[in-house]
Length: 325
Image 1 (tube, rainbow, N blue to C red):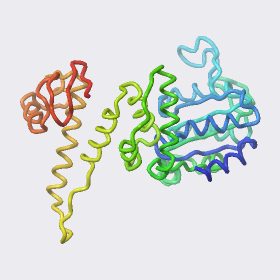
Image 2 (image 1 turned 60 degrees about the vertical axis):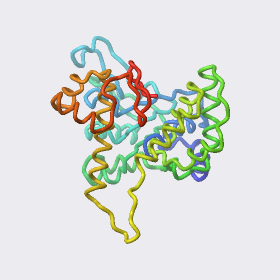
Image 3 (image 1 turned 90 degrees about the horizontal axis):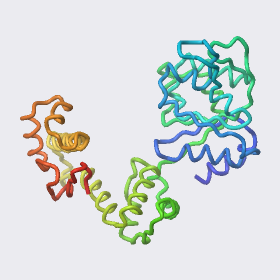
Image 4 (image 1 turned 90 degrees about the vertical axis):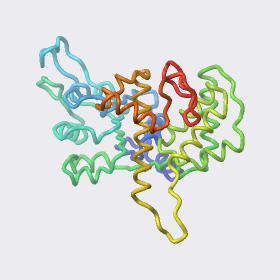
């Protein structure tokens, strides 16, 4: 992170395209905002586009806008996100989700600063700083024919690789303090400092959800006001993801371990679908595409309560709302 910060301090003033890479939840969006905020004009527009959240056929009009009458329903001209970001920063989160035809139009924008609205007859000129983010290896996307190599070189003038939280556990105390302060103010609630025992659990947790997972956990602590609410979750994760015990001679029963892993996964899926259907077992069986009788058998085998509102030592009390303590 120190290396990334040094690089940012050098390039934030230049306006060159920046590619931020890292696992989901590592703070790529926060990093893009930070770069914009220390740019020469932090008060200029900062426009974010979540490329994965917009269907491919709509993304072009969302980015570049359209003219009146260019397609059915285009009753008036509409500027796109690119025009909205003129003079500021355009942040494309999930750049790998853009289809090949739209990548060509984006390449033109980067090459000469020009683009045209859908249905437009004239080119428009803008000046934007482009920041892109992805949690995939774009080199592999290029090799698979899903991403243009020339566009990759255009957006990859400066590359930032954000490490996973598990690789920077020394930052956890500062991040915890930051998130606690934010959420106490946001929810207007008090929260006691975490104990050393809980901190040890946080530090040794592998954080598959990275910083986003940590923030959600701290918000839950502030709202519920109990360390047990988060420590039990961390301990349960360790229990369910613990490696199987290997005998002294190095032998391991692969079939047995695999069977247990499948059993644990099936249990989680069934519980999730039960909660989604408010513990209506007939709807759950239909959603899982199994018979009602088969579902009852699997619920018993998984050790799940047969009805909501009952208590089970492994999953806590199940409320009528479907929430689990």
